[in-house]
Image (cartoon, rainbow over all chains, first blue to last red; front, side):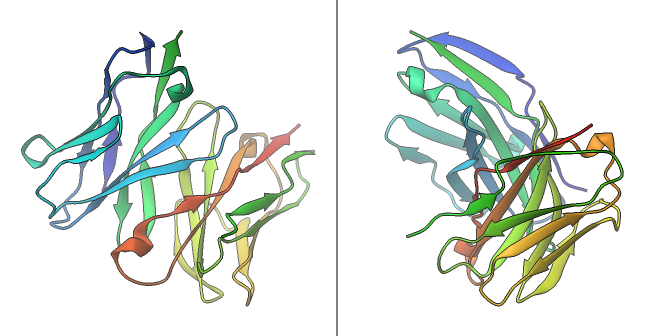
Length: 114
Length: 115
């Protein structure tokens, strides 16, 4: 069975601080796909990134970066110079390729204080 | 490009009643998935529809059922509502082929309250 663990329930930082959200996953698949989603107070899940297990390079998109470590089964998300607009719940997810279903972690609530 | 839309936004029902939630997929997407998100938890997969057929199902009882229409829109029906069915119901759409089809794009959700 697949599992995603986000051990950090809530993180509070002051604007301009860097923050890392942790994600640990479990799967028996040799090829797998990981995702990060952002859920602002409005409730809509916003797609941030898809990561394939066979990709070698880490991703950077503006202030966002993702660190994929197969050896530790982790896919961590870092926000550099956080802003108040980054305040949201962030979910890490793993795709069940058989059912095309996402298995989500329990989420990390990020609060960025001005 | 039109995103995923869901209706209604909010709904209040009484235990034992039936409810239908609706979803229109993003343009160009032919696959729709439904998720239930209880308060303070991550979304849980209910089922997925592709070409008007159920393509996969999570651990939800048969009183959760769905439909997909030729225009790829979808409905989620829940019979015999229970208090624990109170949640945010999220619809997601994706395209049919290739690795990029694994990316699911979500609608704003329908908040269902069962009293």
